[in-house]
Length: 520
View 1 (cartoon, one colour):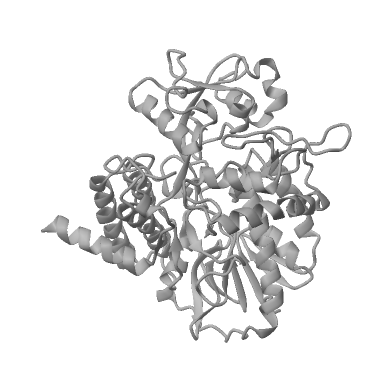
View 2: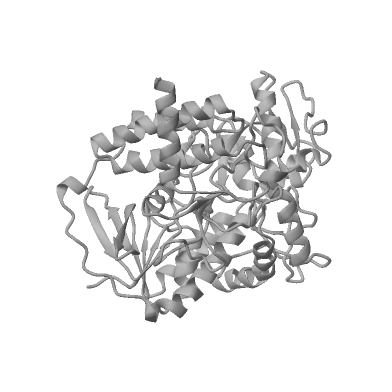
């Protein structure tokens, strides 16, 4: 049986929603793990940002998005996404997402940091991602036009006559398989697994960023990485998350002595933008004072009822959040950068679309506003589906791909190299950055890429190249803005108040120059 003409890489919110929006057109989904197990969407706790409450509006939502984005949010994108938010929430309600309602049947949104209104549509306090995904998975499994391929890891794009014509992916047995397609959608998530401490699943390793760039795709805003300030610091990988909604409910940040530290750093204290809070938490930990999220007064005995997932995680580590402060640390949480797309989700490569965290649409700017990630995923998944539906009849059918030979089936990255990438990124391309550290990152990552080429490891090559794109972009932006903070350039530069674009060739050229100068 032949595969469908439309291929979606990724089994998270953006991928599944796009597939449902394309129905009844035949679609194949490639997922690196069983559906629902390898997607960051499942772990999203806050919810979806949408102006659904009385007194709120898409215009206010867009204004908050732009304020958090530190001067480089695309105005038209922010407003158009905010205006589509309610319709996408209604789509999810029809699919079966059990968003919180009051006794009159009205949605009951909560508030999160940097929002000027209560507009986070959520599920039982901290369960939005899992509940939304459960509804989508059930809908996808009962949709006959959708074929699901699980445990298939995409490693490269198939290119034919200057356009993307599908994907090469490795199955659970290690065999490399070709999946030709007339339209290919990347919805494979972010880059969290490139960092030593992250809230993302291990499948979020930036591979699509690398192989899309290797094919010639433009990468935008790669330097902007958001670190969630309140990952629960109990030694787990990935790190569990203490949702932003806790601070929205009044929880405070304190050090080991019980002293609050955020009021001295920002007028909004604990509800300041995430990058500010992350740096505050990082500084307390670096100074040896520790950092904790204290909800004992704001939530107290109601903790388990209001935030059951966080409560269960804390209790499993011997912490009672109703009575004790929760130990926290900043962890890589979300990548504002990614594969550049236009307003329809088209990348710079013909035949390739992108949606969700893997894409960079201009919505988030330098710092994502809380709960805009799930919103962007469904809005752009819908746009991609509509664009493909309109253009598919005119797209050329892919030719039969060349057989994959053993020489083209490289090994997976060894554990030591994966750990080394994560160490480099956390140490030199993390919450705080400077030229010396970034140069070391470029040199070391370039050496790991050379190792990958010598050993024939597509996995290590993708990790190293994705990390190089982030490090090179961070080195080139000599200012501090949003999620990118340079200790050697601690102020924002008005002349740099624009989005960045980089190609893999440019990143490699920079890394080679740095490596050569270090060796001289």
